[in-house]
Image 1 (cartoon, rainbow, N blue to C red):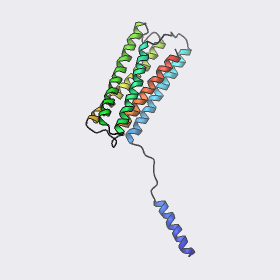
Image 2 (cartoon, rainbow, N blue to C red):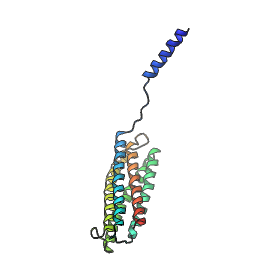
Image 3 (cartoon, helix red, strand yellow):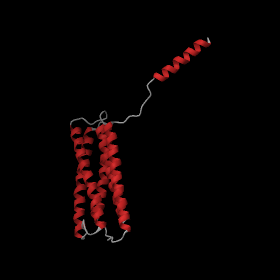
Image 4 (cartoon, rainbow, N blue to C red):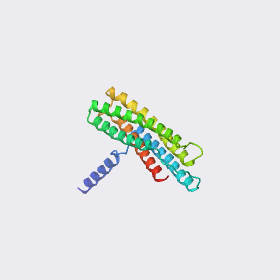
Length: 202
């Protein structure tokens, strides 16, 4: 009896050893996106740190940010709302709403870029140029580098729009949509952070 119990225990131990253990996994493209996001965070952390250090050294001309920057902040916030609407619509297989929300987000993203460019013109009008004033230089660099990333997000978004019109975005195929949503919300949040940073550190 005791021998049979020992044999059963050995069998149980062997089966436990042979049973495949669950492993943590992530979609490789999603993993690459998160690595890219971490890199972007480090870049802008370096920019804002350099801003603070340079400001403390003096020769710093303070100026009011043009009102257009407030407008673009509102536009980018609105685009996050429409992007979330697109995400919810995709999960619910509401294809018409998905397409509408994606097109609205695309339009708002383009409007944001146009607004940022016009804000640069407003900076020139108050004689804040890329060179000659370190405070102005940082505004151009921060908004410009962020704008380049927005362009990349718009290209990604256009790919998703095309897929949505080809019925390739729905509740069973969410990977591309989820990556686009993650990247878009990240860039929206990044600009709101940068805008607040510039307001509080003039």
